[in-house]
Image: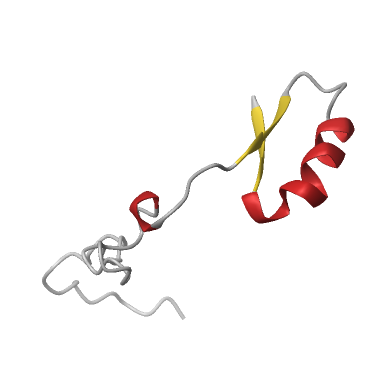
Length: 75
């Protein structure tokens, strides 16, 4: 199922148009976003500031510690 979420601010302009467009497609449902207020925005804290707990980290595998043996030149 694919959900086409229409923001509340664009309901009058887009909701009916998108519902008509996807009417014959059973895999798509057009819905209206009814969330309101800062309490529903999980990316922000209670005062409205961005939540700083989330940290982006480097996911690359760390190099193997130590040194590698020297190789002879093939040329």
